[in-house]
Length: 308
Ligand code: NAP
Image (cartoon, rainbow, N blue to C red):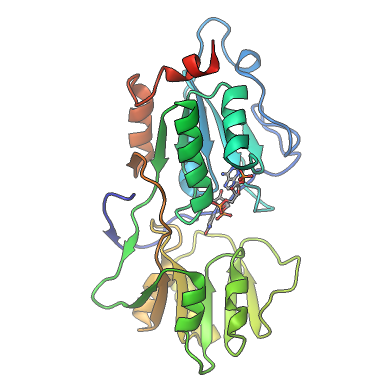
């Protein structure tokens, strides 16, 4: 769990579930989104075994960590994407794309790829993946660390209604038709189909390939970083009366919340889902510190578990 919240600052960077583009292989990358990373023996030094790190990604934080690890010849890291985004940004380490096949599939992957440690840098709302990581790392007895941003906390000028689910967020909009900005991504828009009377403005990373379940909707395709001036102008142009957001935390997606504050708009804020306890840090530097230590919990047990 996040160790502390923070007062929302000005946005600087974007967050995205960024699977690298198929065919855009780097010197470390792969030419197919479905191929797995090469084994350690084909990638690294033959004389010094390097620790194998799996990064569960889909966020700016994961990409930043990948960039740092890509410059560290002592660590052999692979970044895993769910594959939700069509137009991702490249990273300087090997990557894989797609689900593992539940906890069992992740356990198989950790063993087959001889992973030594896992860093869960998924989005705070990717609760299933995070729970699977906790279970699989416990089963294989390898250390797990979460890299997660602190949640946003309302300031004095904010008018938030906090809810636990997107369905509750939809109901919190009320019966009267309103102009609503849905800053929640693409995956869970269906929750708002139960309130078709509102005029929705939806911002998405990729163009829509399917019809939305919302009859009155305007779609804006844009990738962050979003800034306060831009988000304020967007909300004003749309005539937004209420904003719906997930409490993602961090700086990447905060501009809409700051814009709502400036415009004195109410915000329906969806609280984070519960994730099983695991060690957690909130910076890439802290992950690097953790990786530098040999005594992370369960370190060394992996080989015994693998029978090597
Ligand atoms: P989720 O509900 O926790 O995960 C659903 C399934 O997707 C997982 O069980 C797993 O499939 C697969 N999966 C998720 N993240 C993966 C990863 N990094 N690598 C490989 N497989 C992954 O996750 P979600 O909410 O759908 O989010 C999907 C991805 O989008 C995540 O990587 C997350 O970081 C990113 N993202 C999510 C949000 C959000 O609001 N939820 C926002 C921005 C970015 P298997 O069970 O088959 O292994």
